[in-house]
Amino acid sequence: MFLAVSIVCDDYFLPSLEIISECLGLSQDVAGATFMAAGSSAPELVTAFLGVFVTKGDIGISTILGSAIYNLLGICAACGLLSSVVSRLSCWPLFRDCLAYTISVAAVLAMISDNTIHWYESASLLLIYGCYILVLCFDIKINQYLMKKFSPCCTCFTKAMEANAEQQPLVGWREESGPLIHQQSRTDSGIFQDEQDYAQLSTSLHGLHEISEDHPSVFTMPEADMKRILWVLSLPIITLLYLTVPDCRRRFWRNWFMVTFLVSAAWISAITYVLVWMVTIVGETLGIPESVMGLTLLAAGTSVPDTVASVLVARKGNGDMAMSNIVGSNVFDMLCLGIPWFIKTAFMNMSGPIEVNSSGLTYTAISLVCSVVFILLAVHLNGWKIDKKLGAICLALYLVFTTLSILYELGIIGNNPTRVCGN
Image (cartoon, rainbow, N blue to C red; front, side, top):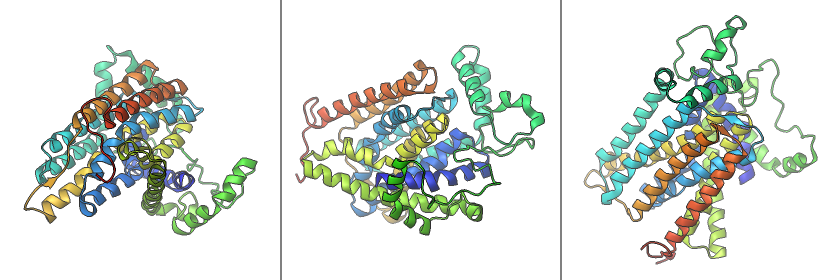
């Protein structure tokens, strides 16, 4: 299942994301915070709908809030440790996404503090996400304004912007506009493009800008021995995906990129469902308590698409897209809670609010806010780049948070009673 998610992300999901970015003129960070976050967070959306309409329990809240720390620290650690490329980061995208995530977490915690969800509370969650998308639409102007305001007093803004501009120049600029590349490549981070002189932005994950040569078939056997073994083992998966998902990397299917995006997101959800099912069976077999399973194996299992997608783009040197996907996925997860809540309270069950269980919210809130602060502080102290040092720091912080959470859930620290499965 891990191999299947990797193949879907690498061969279908990320190429479709690139073409969407080209058509809309999205920058790396905006594409990572929107389409990439929405597609890789499809399992959380399915889980939230199941929790509200099928099981009528708190599975959606516990899954989304429980895996938030893994999304922030665990995936960042994977990007740093599993990538041999040092990726530069920009200050504004990371600060923007962390601020939006902190606001959305505070809103969710305020809503469920009284154990009930009303229609206007769920509608306000959708409104917060709408404001976040609106900020992304005018990201270029906001970015330029903040650079002018804070560059004199905060040198990290200027250094990160210049380093990122040198590392990731825009693809498709006209040769005579060469002097503008260094000045405009990072400030060009909005959805709407007013200038006619530069082409649509390409994240260049798979070299799709080279349209002159068609992409090789997925049935082409690799040359390396280890890759050949993996290719043979994954051949049934490759064949199934080839028959069900249009490969938009090939010229014939290039205009079908939205179909590729939606179908690959559906496959990611289905594969993650089986993956979480298998992880649950492993936990039951090993006798791991349910609460500890939710904090460790299940949290990592539901975030497999985010992990794979972020590591793949980090290996290409697209640090802003990787980080925006990490934090943007968490922001989208908050929306995943708002959509089913609003549908049920506004259209299906207008007589009363939704009942939820809000035990342990204080510890969850402190952990989430601290993880956001730590990730910002670690990136700043590391010189605004993703490397193995940052990966080691994030891994250490994640282990500390996970250990404290497990001790809290087991009742060793705090006053939280131990919850045994079946009681």
